Image 1 (tube, rainbow, N blue to C red):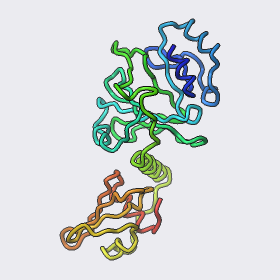
Image 2 (image 1 turned 90 degrees about the vertical axis):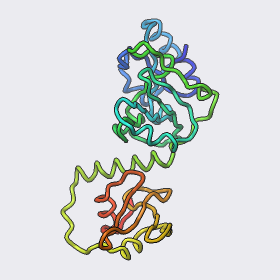
Image 3 (image 1 turned 180 degrees about the vertical axis):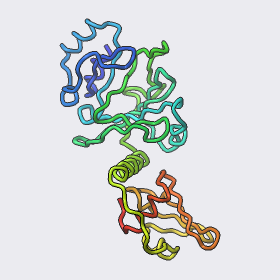
Length: 251
């Protein structure tokens, strides 16, 4: 039984139907694992049930849920994700499994990018060998299954995207007043950035001040009339970068 294998791994399995809905009230299983007796009872009662894993602290597990039908975000991230446990979902997407540190609290994030969700605290994810309503089964990709590859930790790019998402959510809840003060010149911008490096004539890279940037992801250059151009490769908007520079803070 797959559920027993997941339980032995230290994860928290629960039964789900073909629509991916839990067949048992599962809030308590966000804080405790089921017993082997409970697993046996569930899958005896529902022999055709699929299995899902409760994400978050109870399983020390976060899953990047990539569905290309909902957007191209997964393709943009593919080359930046480390090798880790990976499932091909029944809908031909991918689930990338990442290990959480003991005690880490990472909340789920919907629409981290178009077609990409982060399933973590407060979420569960359908796992192999469950059957999708399309008729296909969830399955680990060759060489990336349980015991075949160690789970990587959440990569910096995902942590950065989570920080950006939280900042945007906070700004939506608590909008700022329009700024009418100083004009940000190139000299002011470069002086307020960290990790500045010149990359060419009138081109620099630096750590983005609008998110917790662990690797320089901000490009700085100048345009017509000396206008400062800022581009964050992690996804921060120009307005977010400009506001962080004017506040003089790094999130």
